[in-house]
Length: 469
Picture 1 (cartoon, helix red, strand yellow):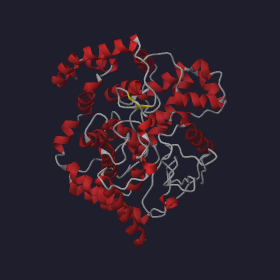
Picture 2 (picture 1 turned 90 degrees about the vertical axis):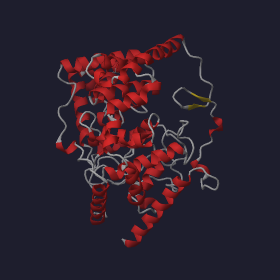
Picture 3 (picture 1 turned 180 degrees about the horizontal axis):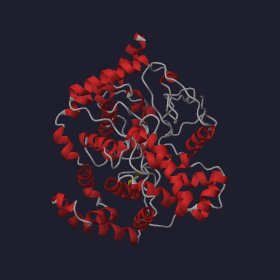
Picture 4 (picture 1 turned 60 degrees about the vertical axis):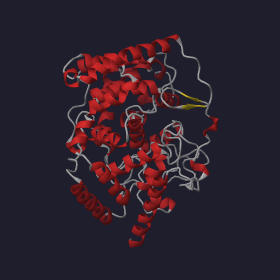
């Protein structure tokens, strides 16, 4: 036990040192960690890199950009008098019309009250970050996932670059700030999205707000047992059963499980499941309206594709719901339909599954750095007592669904798992009350905890996902 602890400390220190050095001369960066970005020729307006020149903007796209620019003046005035704006109906209307991209960081910051939270915790983040660098048991898994997150984005393409450093520190610090959740793989995409619009500390407090406040309540999505995820998925099935009975019956007949196709919808509020421009619009609405947005969006997706889904086989339906391709609506039309869908669900009493359960709520945040140290020490003692994780048998249909989700996901990088899984196999074990797979650190000889919850794309040489229970 002592030798494992010493080895974990050494590995943690080595990983942290690499992020401290960044891309300075002499930095040790293996070839597999740096993608060959010379093949990318074009960067779009959101920072994503493309291999081929982008098509010329259509008249509709050019008009949308002009409209967005005209709205900037209105948003600047509204942000200058935010307390008054919160009391008007105009704010909601303007949020659903789309926050101008140039003002999205300010608007999201106001909606999440980031500045007010920072004032009450002045100096806390830097101290918590230093503590996390020394003690977080999730360092190794965070390091692996940082190198898998948005590598086709200009901010995250360089291994150990500035934004990769920020992403690493935000996730490591939060893993100690909220030890009940620690780190879960789906959090890396959310933190990266926030870092596209916030600096490092602001992104940390924004992530904290999303997980801890009552309106968004993402804590219950990521904590062991995933109570809120399961509750939202059950509510989604209830909506489809009542309002789309034929489609629901057909999906049941072909054994399409809502727990699988809707997993990423709710865990990450449709990140990587919609065109990025539309994803931002959905996140604008989510920042303002909370849980009601992904609930309505999940129903809207099934409703949009109801004719196609009613004729599909299992494979076609799962692929369609994972990629959501071939719809003919632009972003404005989808957001208008989303608002109408929210009204429809509210009229039927289905817009929300009800108040969050006690088990879903985040614990009170540490009041100061001393209380955080106490919590970290307590969690370390608990880990020492429960060094060997308990195991439980998983539902077979859910296990098969996990395989389907893995096999239908597109990898962010083609070489991300080569180093940590040299034999090409991915092993999963499940802690008590964890229904999603976790990659054990021992499989790659590391004593640090590894917490991959099935949101990546691990496959063996035959394209399968080996699962051991």
